[in-house]
Length: 335
Image (cartoon, rainbow, N blue to C red):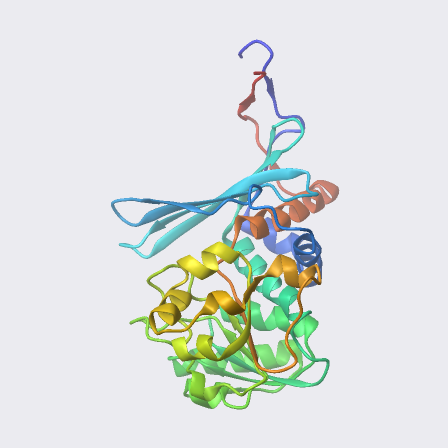
């Protein structure tokens, strides 16, 4: 051991996917993210993600040290596009003594924080009245989006669409029973979205053509879009972005410049920059939704969300005696 160096005390805690499932809950996640986003934005604390290209895919690093938190860290995603595989790892470092406090499986956290952040945004975007929701997609992200939205919205019914009939029927049956609202499986995006107050977009087409078209969306609808996070991906019709009176971005620069939806809208002659604000500004009440027009919450994801939620889960794990203390660790050295 180097002179003056030390190992983490308490030892570095490892949280598995099962640990995350046992520790997380929607209300707690939404509250933590809503409070964190109500603080002023500081781009130095959450720089833009970095992507390294590999032979099989890419490796993405998303760092953050949220203001008011005890920990900083990052989420690393290793994706083998060639084989359709990905792994997620979150690190938590104590901002005071630099020790590695935790290593956390980031798979489930990614889905939870994405939906919980959207729900936090919805608290400032939705009217206080019974709403009909449309869900585009029937996988893990779509389920998470509806579950989280149901915690903050007065949902009276929902419609779900996805390419595979069995999947959308299963979604409708299981989520109807879980949430206590009628959910209907429909064959097309138009059938799901037309007339809906809230549209939850959590699926992209295989050829990256938009899955939600402007002509389906009613004038005062609220759209949540989480499925287009890179320049090559498409989820929203460019004309829909053009119709929006208000766009809220979880990560302002990345949404405007790295989301395929915004790039396509700009190429089509629309100006998303003119109507886009940060989620920090919305939840700190510096801006509010216009009284008329479509509102879009657009997410590319952020290490900020990962670290806020990971810190909450770490504190819960310590309090409950959950997780695996590692028998070895990395040195913290004096410089």
